[in-house]
Amino acid sequence: MARIAPLVPPYEADVEKALRKWMPPGVAHEPLALFRLLQLHPELASRMRVVGAGLLAHGELPALDREIVISRVTARCGCRYEWGVHAAVFAPVVGLTPEQLEATVSGGSGHPVWSDRHRALIRAVDELHDTATVSGDTWAALAEHLPAPELLEFLVLAGWYRTIATVANGVALEEEPWAVPYPGR
Image 1 (tube, rainbow, N blue to C red):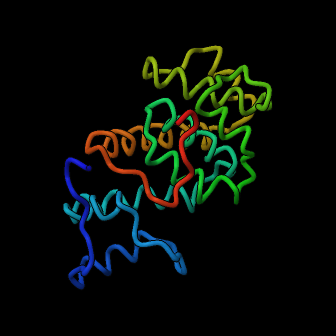
Image 2: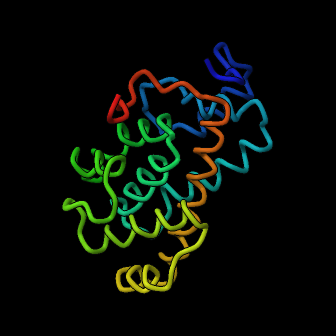
């Protein structure tokens, strides 16, 4: 059970409107528990939505790269909640294979499912997770594949999903019932 309970329907009109902004049009699911949790603090939620939506819908990183980064960050943080949501909703759309998805949890940058580009992303995520920085060698490997705007976006994306993982893990947010189960359960 979550340490702070997300809002449940029926929602007040302003909450309903805010939650609709979080969810893509035509989605059959109830608003995510994370969104309903954040809506307990509407000002914070509105600021977070802008950043999150910007990274998901308006970034320059290719969608597959973005989802590899998100999956690896959330896996390294042990955030079953966010990992499962992205595995269910975004991974199939961007072409992240089941083997790659599993490797975001159990494998490192040396796993054979990764291209050189994706190895560099995984290695950089791991270094950021472990040290809050990226070594010169790893940065050089990333820079072979990503121009400066994408390098900056990568750093913000990795930090953003560490923040999301911290919130979800900190409140012990329960996994969405339709989410992909975390490997090794």
